[in-house]
Length: 490
Image 1 (cartoon, rainbow, N blue to C red):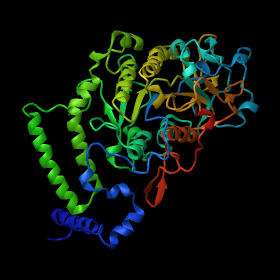
Image 2 (cartoon, one colour; image 1 turned 180 degrees about the horizontal axis):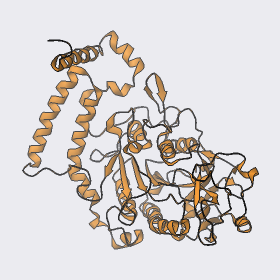
Image 3 (tube, helix red, strand yellow; image 1 turned 180 degrees about the vertical axis):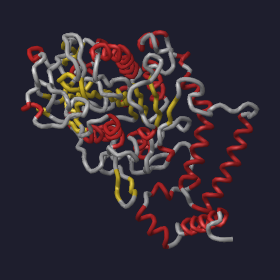
Image 4 (cartoon, rainbow, N blue to C red; image 1 turned 135 degrees about the horizontal axis):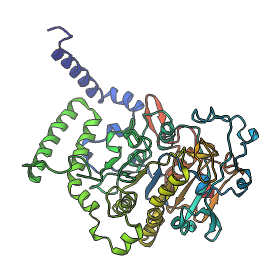
């Protein structure tokens, strides 16, 4: 039989795998351990659905145990929601001064415009809370919660297009392939509930659909970490997780027997070749089995009080809506899920912004406020970090035609607004300042690496020490950057 025959090829592969598997003992293990992360050499007997994280973590006492990240995909306009610029009323339809732009790059969607006319927000702003934070009329419910928020007006990024920008803020790199934030936390801190994943992703519908910029699974992927750390995406129709229910004719007892036999085969294979992903596969099968009970209980909201449901708004009983997902996020936090990511799209408002942003804020405003209230009244906000925001901001100048009642805005990475609450965040503050055009930062910039470093700090993690060796280099969520922002800490 020649070496190109498929059977011979498989035999050669087996031989190589056996070699590397056996090399993990004796002198081989010392060399290999110097290149790889210790997680790859974990005792196979510990492979369960509930992994415990890195033993040295947390590095110090955490303020937050879990995170709920409300991600506004498409980039909401800070100018119409949070960054009040009253002087712009006098600049209507005047050109953005070149001294403000100062040669900064813009997208190809507006680079061909002959003018960059100023488009002041048509929405009214009022001061709220004990510190008089300015909030748009678009957010009446959230405005009542500003004393619990740290509003960060000076978040900035280098990415100017959606996919690189979302990938950047989620993984620390504009290039795909690195672990997402939730995967890093699953890897570092482990799970607090053996019956649910450490990292769960919820996608919110808008008017019955999703629309907007595509969101790829790598945004909640594990990258080069073990696949057991990737986010589990819950669906709003059918089984919350694909193939969660037993097929017709397969009883729970028979499925248990099948999994036990499969685990034996996988363990035997692991003993032969030493592939750590086999242990991940065993753990994922076990998690899926336990989720058959835990997920239906999680998604059944019949035990919620009428007062709670009313607080989240009229769409809370419609699976997949942002309101329903915010309630589900609280239930996940209650059950010890480490990181819950709630996505909602359709914030990419290059035109017809006033109508579209009014619709979007009408969808998210009440549920966001309700989530904070709900956590607070249950005593959970103190150790649950809630983060809100998108991947970049919007320009003061109009994209396309400008009228007194209608305008659009292009991408703007130089400054945008996010807010954080709970979990050790200093409440009732507005951090940083931008110029009169909300174009440049004038005080206290917060790069997205700084934001992620601060999030990890609140969870008891030194962001420079949460690393994973891959291809000869130590990788981390904040890449080689990032500074904790002390002003945001309580």
